[in-house]
Amino acid sequence: MKAKIILVMTLLTFVVIFAVQNADAVALRFLFWEFPFSLALLIFVVFAAGLLLGWVLSSISPVKPREETPS
Image (cartoon, rainbow, N blue to C red; front, side, top):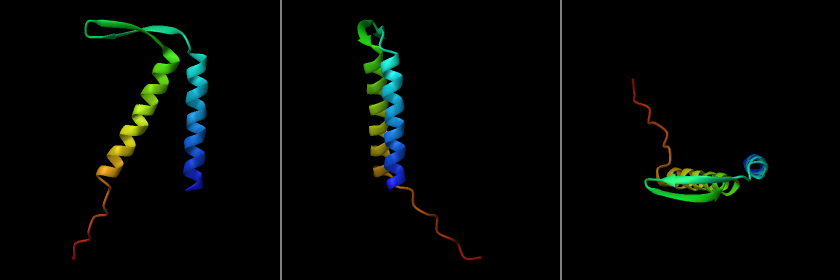
């Protein structure tokens, strides 16, 4: 459990460093809309959405061990 926390904190630190180094404004386009957006904020939002989606999907369908068939 402690190793998992250290891994997550390390990954989060790298994401924050990467986001701060890429703090330019970018044009975010979706269909026919266009928004000026901070690249650092966009990186962080996409990372957080990925973490949330992974957590939700792993809690919905846990991997169950396969039952052994008698031979």
